[in-house]
Structures are given as C-alpha cells and as structure tokens.
Amino acid sequence: MAINKIWHSLAKDRGPFIHQIKTAFFLLLTLTFLLFAVAYASDFTFDTIMFPQTWFTKIMNQTHYKVTDSIWANHNQKDTLAYLPNQKIQKRGSTIYYHIAHPSNYHYILDEPDICSQWDPFLVLMVPVAPHQVGARNAIRSTWGNESTVQGKAVMTLFLVGLTGGSDSEKAQQQLEEESRQHRDLLQSNFVDSYFNLTIKTMVIMDWLATRCPQANFSMKVDSDMYLNLENLMTLLLAPNTPRQNYITGMVMWNQDVIRDKNSKWYVSEELYPEPKYPTYLLGMGYVFSNDLPEKIVEASKEIKAFNIEDAYVGACVKHVGITPSSPPDPSQFRAYLGQYNREDFLRVITTILGSPQQLIDIWEDLKRPT
Image 1 (cartoon, rainbow, N blue to C red):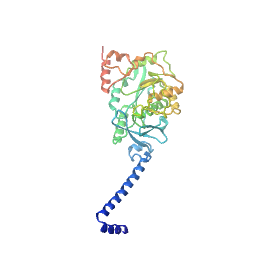
Image 2 (cartoon, rainbow, N blue to C red):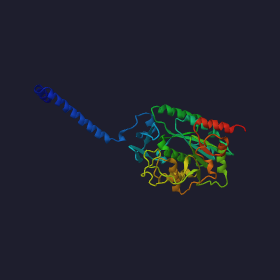
Image 3 (cartoon, rainbow, N blue to C red):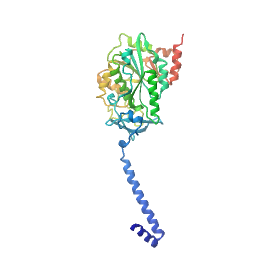
Image 4 (cartoon, rainbow, N blue to C red):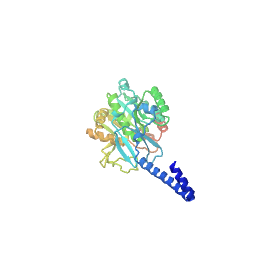
C-alpha cells in the first residue's frame, strides 16, 4: 500500500515522465527474472524427466528411464533413446547418449525359452528387426525363414525386437503379442528399439543363444533386409574344413578407421573407443559363427566398453576372446549389393542386401521356379 501511495504522489507531480520511469522499472524487473530463468535452464539436466505412468513404464519394470530426443545425420525423424542409470556416456554435438551393451541389464518380454529343446536345430538364424516392420518379418517367413530343413539339417529362424515407444506403444505391443502367439518366432527385450541401440540388440541375441540354445551347432545374425541362400550357407557349414568351434565368418572388414566426425551417423568418441582403427570384424548385414561363441562374446562384453557400432563391437569382443574372424572360402558369396537382378548371381551367393520385402518375395519366387 505504501509503495502505491508513493507512486501515486510522484505521478501527480511528474506526470508522464514518472509513468515512464514506473514502466521501465517493471520492465527491468521482468528482464532480471527472465535472465535468472535462462541461467537456471542452462544447468537443467534430464535427471528429472521420466515417462508418465503408462504401459511403457510398467514394461520397464518400474525403472525410471532417462530420455532424450536426437536427430540423426541424414535423417529427419526423431529417435527416442532410453538408458539405464550409470551407463556409459557418449556426446555428439549437444546431445548426450548413454549406452550399456551387457545383456544382464535387460530382460525378455516375449520369449521362446524351450523352442531349441523342441527343434534341436543345427543352425539358428537370428534376425534383429524393428517392432513395426511386420512386412519384413512376413517376407522372411514366406521365403528363406520358412526353410526348416536344409541338406538334412534343422534350421530355425527367430526375430528379435525391442520396445516400440511412441504414443501408440500399447497398441503396437498388443499387435506384437498377437504376432508372437501366431508364429512363435518372436523375441522381445526391454531396450528401446533404435539405431543407436543395435549393439544392445546384438548382445541380447548373443545372450539368448548362450542361455536358451547352447545345443545348436551354428548361428547367424542376419539383418531383416537380406536375401539368404541357405543351400549355399549349409554347404559352407558342412564342409569338412569348417571349424565347429571358435569360428566366425562373413564379409571381413580389415583396417577400418574409427569415424571421429561428430556429424556422422557412425561417430564414435575417443572416450568410448580410443584406438584409431577397429579390430578385424564382420560386416553386420550377416555373419555366421559356431555356437560356442555367444557365451564367450557375452563374457567379453563385461570387459569391453560398449560403443554404438555393433558389428565392430562384436569384433572387439571376439578379439578379446583371442579369436580372429575367418575369411570365407569364397568371399564373393557375402556381398553387400549385387546390383541389377541376375538369377545366376543370386544362385551363387550366400547373402546380399535387398531394397524391400517385396523384392525378396519376387526374387525368391523366381529362384524357386522350375527351370
């Protein structure tokens, strides 16, 4: 009240001049408040951000996950990344990523724990795939994933997905559960399914093979956009000179530089991987290995700091175990791209990248037609 009386008295004596001072005074107070707010916000961390109490949080086992949004180089969409407390940190630009690869940090939401004891497979094909890519899974199910016996050996195909995230996550999860009931070939773990988390995804695959399917002779990690010629693969695996232990082969990558460009999709910081070059590794599109390796790779991941280039990380774990990746007898059978479709080329390779699920179906139908 006293302040208002003073302002009123001054206003009577000084008129518009005092009114301008009054206005300036309040503007100064407002500006000061805004400056303090900005300073406070600059020190704000994501520690206080958490998901609302939805299905997504319940599925995370009541763990408070920290969340950030990132825009990948060469992409316009946002990837939601979730991470556990105490995970390793990688910075790119102004964004902080956290990453832990050891699979003991995660659990299975959808699982087929007894399927290997029922099938007793010689070869297990493990396909990492995004939850929404139903078309890719169905294309594989109707082509190479439908082959259960090759050259007299049992073959089994399984798909691994992470959490869907997003506003429609509950509906998407219900669809995954229905798909699982229908096909019995779907595994799901509680990491957020994103490009950056491919290392986690691969290590969960290794964990599943080690704990659920140790009786298999060989396994293959093969991407969902791949053509796979199982006849040629089985011929390789059954060859008398193919080792049954400590064996991993595919498209061998030698002497590859670590990318330090922070604008690159494949950037890895020196804090995560200090060496200038990666150890010898197999390109992640598809590599096959003796099934004694998954347990050894999982054990090695306790010692090897995680980084986000999943195939190079597996290479680092393999090196830690003391194993050198093997070049296949015919390296041309593991091809990145074959270019324009030629039937004879596809009959010779083991695996190559395709452009779409429909292309896989079309090529498969042509290869299976009578000649």
